[in-house]
Length: 222
Image (cartoon, rainbow, N blue to C red; front, side, top):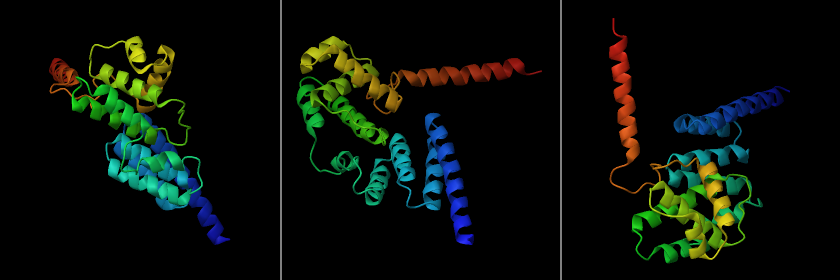
C-alpha cells in the first residue's frame, strides 16, 4: 500500500513538473523547462512523454547532442512507436531526401551558411514536432518551405511564389509548410538560431531597450 501511495505521489509531482516545463518552454525559459522535464523523468523514468519533452527543450536550447540522447532514450522506451522512423533518421550518417534537395537547389549562388541554417531548421523542426505527425507527402514541399523561411529570416529578397515555381510545387503548399515551421519553432525575423549575417538587427533592438530602461531609471530618480 505504501509503495502504491509513493508511486501515486511521484506521478502527481511529475505531472506538475511537466506542466511547469511546458509553460516554460512556451515562454522561452528553456533552462527552466529542461530542469522541469528532467525532474519529471527522474521521478517516473518509464514515462516516455517526459523524455520527449526534454528532447524538444534541449533542441530549442541548441543542445542537439543531448537532444539526440534523449530521443534515443525515448526510442528505448517506445521501440514500436509510430515516431521511431522519423527519429531514427536523425541518427543516420547520410542526408535525407529533404536535405538532399535543399543542398542541390540552394547550392547555386547561396552561401553555405544559409544552407546550413536551413538544414539546422529541419533538424530542430523534426524534434520540436514531438508526438505530432510529420506530414511528408513530397520532400520538395519541405525543402521549398525551409528555403523560403530561412531566406525570410535573413531578410533576403524572395517571394513565396518564386520559391514554389523553383521547386515545382504550389504556392499554397509552401505557405502551409512555412506556417508549420514558424509556429512549431516560434521563428521570428532575424532569429538568432538561423540568422547568418555578421550583424543581427535584433542586437540594435536589445541595445535600444537597455538604453530606454536606463533612461527611464534616471527619469524616475528623485
